[in-house]
Amino acid sequence: MASSDVERGGGGGGGKGRGGAAAAEFYYEPPDPAEREYTAWVVPMLVVANVAMFVVAMFVNDCPAHRHPLGPCVAPFLHRLSFQPLRQNPLLGPSAATLEKLGALDWNNVVHQHEGWRLITCIWLHAGVIHLLANMLSLFFIGIRLEQQFGFVRIVIIYLVSGFGGSILSSLFIRNNISVGASGALFGLLGSMLSELITNWTIYSNKAAALFTLMVIILINLAVGMLPHVDNFAHIGGFLAGFLLGFVLLIRPQFGWMERHNLPPASRVKSKHKVYQHALWVVAVLLLIFGFVFGLVMLFRGESGHDHCRWCKYLNCVPTSRWSCDN
Image (cartoon, rainbow, N blue to C red; front, side, top):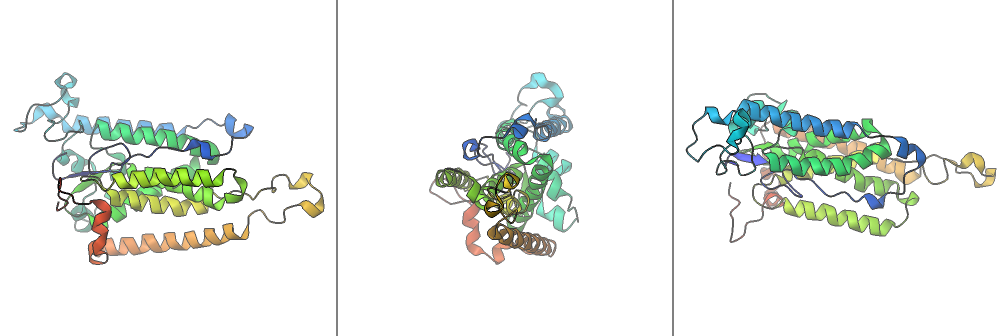
């Protein structure tokens, strides 16, 4: 991308962006017959919507209609849908100006032009084909399994709210670049997988191995976000929102609740959920409310997150002898 671009990448994507994460399917128990009968449809629709939005972005971009001092358009046989020169956007996508026109996240527009809608629209835009493929593959493999387990309503809520949370945190820390991508929403789904495992701890087998594997996947993806041109604040914000939402929306009945009618009275489970599950639910709701209210108030007051957390810049980019994090 051009230096003014920030694309949300991660696990497989490049650039300053929110990236996808690998799914750890084996940590779930084998699905029951009802789950096997359910065919996930919302996650594929989300993938289609993201792809369609990318096609629209390329149509609006219309590379051949503009002069490009950095080189010719890529794939000119696509005519109006051809990509920007590689020196301008190595991810095979539109220009920064097109992304900004269509709703990319930009601090100045959100705060000073009162365009808060960009906190949502940026989730549906992608910086290029490579960025789009990385995110959509992650969404497909993570989202399908979650939708089969918990239904489409809860997964869509986690996806959208996590993306919104990632946009808020990104805006608080990144002011000089635009940002696009669904990676905050994807990290939210990954975070919800972790909290779902924790809150439903007693009903799973091989818990320690599942937790270790999931933590490794999460840490690897967050570590990739510390490379230059990757918006790790969007990753972290989405992950935290999804992690808290998992305690609220993905809670399961404790072991033995579904079979209580087939057990003798003395062996029946008395409550649907354990005390710690209720406690985690309450704490998560309170933290979600506080986090979103506090973040939005800070954002629209024009405050910078760096003023309250000077070391947080290292969560987004770690400088080395090979690159600088100044921009």
